[in-house]
Image 1 (cartoon, rainbow, N blue to C red):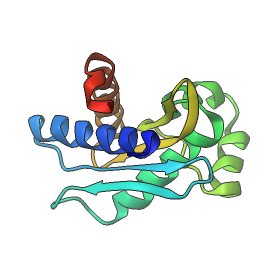
Image 2: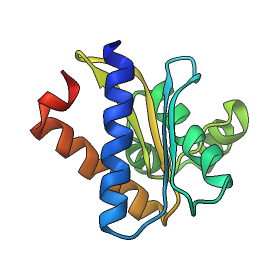
Image 3: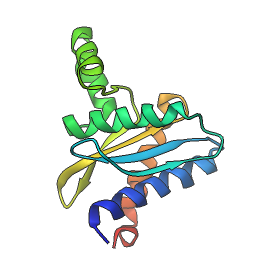
Image 4: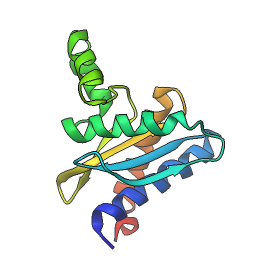
Length: 139
């Protein structure tokens, strides 16, 4: 299987597993460097609106090759930049987006939506930690 697809699916599954433990309903997805959808997992009770929010977070993370939580801090003193990013190419600079790093290179973005943005961020970090501890998931 393609390593990028494998990573995207493994991340999405890990987020869903952690969301279930916390009784959260989430959408998680992955996009490639061009913002094209690679994988989408949406839990049953999650609003359809979460798909677009997750996609926009993933797009932001892929384009800047940074977690969206880092971008929030990077741009916090410059609302004009935040407005330009949101309006210019449809990215969403809110915690819950992560660059998809495969073989040491950014290959796209990962986005999570469905809870408070702090919950989205927490689940993404837990999924990344899990994948680091369990490399067999990616083999």
